[in-house]
View 1: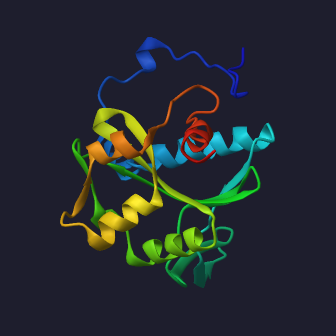
View 2: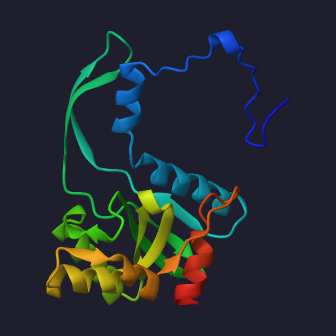
View 3: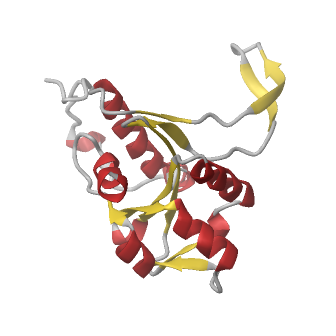
Amino acid sequence: MRYPNGIEYKEVLKKERSHKKDSKEISISSANRGMDLEHDINLSNDYYRDHDICLITKRPTPINVVKVDYSKGAKITHAYFEEQSTTDYNGVYKSKYIDFEAKNTKNKTSFPLNNITKHQIEHLKRVLFHKGIAFFIIQFELLDKVYLLDAKYVIDFYENGDRKSIPLTCFETNGVEIEKAFNPRLKYIDAIDKMYF
């Protein structure tokens, strides 16, 4: 038997299951906190690409490799970032350039602006200047809600706001909540349609 994603089902015997997580397992899961949003977006992008809905890809972070260990098959042992990355994702939808950053927070009432860097703001301002579509996808983990918020609101709070965060009410009033589903995992194209088309 196979799941829809092609992975074969393997039954786990009760005696093999461990109800107690070891410390290594706990540290791995806490280190990957926030990767769930990125993973869900990547799966959604695969779905959208495979169904010719849009072409959005994750932008790779530019690194300069300094040292490689070839004894265990080309493992990078020393590298550094060549330049600051801009945003997480870009691509094309309905003949429009799309550019966005994905972030998450454990805060229930606001999104802290210290999660955003100045160069990301500058990049998104350029996208808007050239008439592209720029936004943020923000996940409020503890509320189990994901919002799309146009970059102009984030830029305004970042540059002119009295606060060091964007209140949840701004997302509820000016953003679009992104519906979660099986395929695509995050229906953010529906949110783009509501916001921009």
